[in-house]
Image (cartoon, rainbow, N blue to C red; front, top):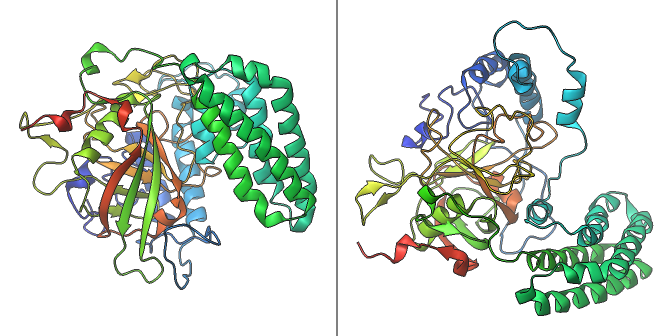
Length: 455
């Protein structure tokens, strides 16, 4: 690897051996060819990605000053995407390298790129829950659409927001009995209370609109969507499937957990320190999430530096010494976990093989690489089951690399999203220190916790 692009042995897990190929963890050989095509425009050492995706006020992050952007990432990403497309279109549609009669490709392409991607991490987590209740989704959708309504300038946006609120209120009133029937019996009382809070909150939001208080809309929207998410989680009755026997004794997260990652920023006048809130999804990645929570409880990541920060991913998890992953002190051996991919429509994850290897080129993953701050496991290029402790957060714009037509979905195990302060991931640099990662909720969903074993 190029000396300027690697800082530790983490480069051999989940990082491309070709330093010019920005923006991916290890690609297959055809994608390296695409990288070479794009290298004339992209093979430069840029400054860390800068962004104006700043929020006016972000809790627990201290900011000062500003930055300029000296590198056109959009240009570069488009170049890479076009190059990858030129090389990899046949495999994308299930063709082999042999010659066969041509078939129409327009319908396939339209399937891959139809519709705008869902980029909000909260929405992705809500839709990833193992539930099937149309009534609550009809409340959720117009509340999420408020985000687009607020893109209109001035108070004119409030007219559109009001339509969203009326639609959500009508859906809640008409669908309340169906929503209640979908609650798990053990969680019914909590679900009913949350629905009452949601109804009251919708009335409060209506008054906010009547007062033409645009600035108060987004915070109230977030509160209401949190209520919706709570109701939806109360519809999940136990863990929905059996983990395969060969992985059943590993640490498993049978549900969800939330962690706070505190990072101390070095040599950056724009950010002093920040707390990133991360939701881990054990419903769709129980082995991967369980492994991470187990390491968090061991304090494995506390004091560890950020080891890669190139404007496309932020990565850490490579311990000091020759080992590239976690060595379990009770066994003295490296602990690795399998590739774990949940496909939309399946009842359980696929283990040990990429979707490409299975020929599932257009399958939709339940946890896609859509959101800025998507969290996934790094691994060795040619070993699907080599992930251990190295994790990365993707910094991407979904429009340039839409889900299921990029080289990440279906090849790497996504197991969570940064839900607070995700924008500030782009400010992290190599050498910044993770002061701590702490589980703030959901630890009771961890089974087989190896951190409790002495040794």
